[in-house]
Length: 569
Ligand SMILES: Nc1nc2c(ncn2[C@@H]2O[C@H](COP(=O)(O)OP(=O)(O)OP(=O)(O)O)[C@@H](O)[C@H]2O)c(=O)[nH]1
Image (cartoon, rainbow, N blue to C red; front, side, top):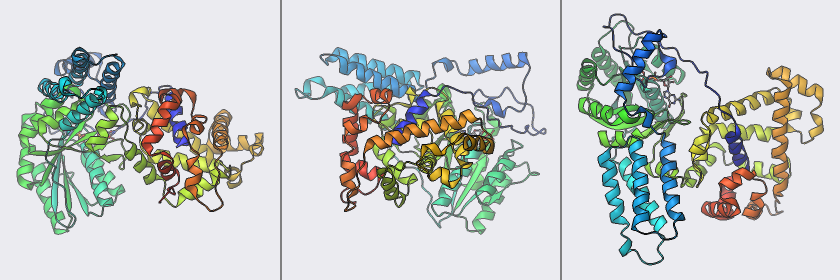
């Protein structure tokens, strides 16, 4: 845990860097009539050409007209931050009376409205909370802040939960799932992620590319599907998406695929003809589920656009993409309201496995800065195989914090997903606290360190002797990894700091091998010595750390988290 905390704090320190990722999109087919300016949400790296200055100005004006409240867009993390602040301000008040509660609710409503949530939803939420928090009927001494926080929590959960689960595919029973969404929302990428997720669960998925609108769509799907070894169907020549969809579905039904995924063309709200095409594909393939893919940054326009899709195809579920880092996602609540369908997954990166099942309660809990400890524990247990844990503890207890251990922990940390998200799983933290871009920067830093370590010998990786790293070795490692000598020295400095921290932990492994006894000495005082001061401050000092550890369930769960060998395990 300390390693994770330490690495998390390193992420907060890093300065913002611009992403240089480029993704060129092939030009659209020439046989289509020319289209209007691209929608605002289209990611710039995918622009097929760079318009001249006048063209850019025209596009910007058009974009502003389409999204009048773009400036008011708030990132989801900011929404959580605003709500948490409103609640915190209320708890600072000496007496919680009607006026204080009204102010707090107004503050929360303002934050929700600014995050693109529909006015009616906000108004309903406000009156529901007022009903729950009826001051007169509350017993004296009741923790009003907690009751209000709980009410806000359950109201947000209600907003995100349409009350009916979506269709879920069953193994060995053929289902057709059709993906719809705006241009560039991440539909094609998400189709493959969805197929891959189910393939890992034992399904036999297949992909049909009925996107005949974007010239590169078939190649993109083909490439992704090939990498994931998922059968695909599409055509370079055929321009009728309905024909391709029907042929693809038939082919894969014959091949006994139990999850046939149909990718359709990207839409823009105004393009009525394309909406009609989507309706025809749905009519011809009779999907069991239509999934609306929405870019997490769509903002204010989310409700109307989701509503437009719902009207043209019977949307049964929503997937929100680009929720990694600081994606704007206030519209998620509106999309659920507009489609009356649940969010089932979120996309957390460009890679195939950067895809998470969406669970309403942990999500809202993180949003409100209440953390998601069970999610965090699951994540840690997922990435650190149980059989590795006792061995790691044993080594740490012996004071052998080697570079190899650090390398393995880096691997685990990267597997845990975007660091901002891991961060928000700690109660009291919000990913809002992290500077923009720091997620990418910290991941890049970890990968850089790992590249350096890849150029080390086994003896160097397993050594605990700091003197081993002589000048000549450092120069050799820098040359081998293509990095500067200074980079290697920086990495070694970080390693030394961590090694020192672990030596302060003074873990004692009892002779009888009872690891729980060892982890019991990880009390708040002990832990506070190894947590970087500004991180400790954010946690609310030793008191905050104590309550965090209590929430983990004391030594027992910490031992579970660290070693999976606590009492009764
Ligand atoms: N960071 C991040 N990028 C994503 C995510 N999902 C998709 N993308 C990226 O978003 C861009 C658009 O994705 P596509 O899958 O091509 O979008 P599309 O909706 O199929 O596009 P059209 O065919 O034009 O409709 C690509 O660069 C993807 O790599 C995500 O969850 N996180």
